[in-house]
Image (cartoon, rainbow, N blue to C red; front, top):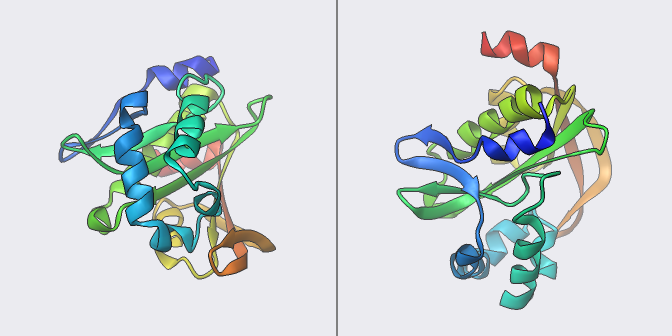
Length: 188
């Protein structure tokens, strides 16, 4: 399938009133207020939080990803219409490998939303985009994020020393990966 087919899969119903859908410019206010209110918590792990210093900067990013066919980075998780978090899938220009990233608002932690969204995006990566490999990276100390990859059966491949950064400085990142042939066995 074409890379554009991946975007055609959205929105994805995650069950229990939750969906993953592409952002629109109408989402800017809620996205910005979430980043502002949870800056300290998500900034511990996400390097982009420090650089997102204004609503205008958030809007610039939002507009840059909304209509791109070569990425699903501009996607949000919504529960009964309320913004719960973000999930993204990006891939190389040759559609060999991709990466899934995610974060969730504190009020929505522990509901399995991120695991369901990452599972759905893994399906999109392999069955719609046609990737052979998908990676999830998480800081060594970010147990909740690491648990998502582990629940989905991603294999831990190693540690990238000093490859991440959060509000506490540089941090080591755990690399998890899944191959298309392995995923087919997982989803059977």
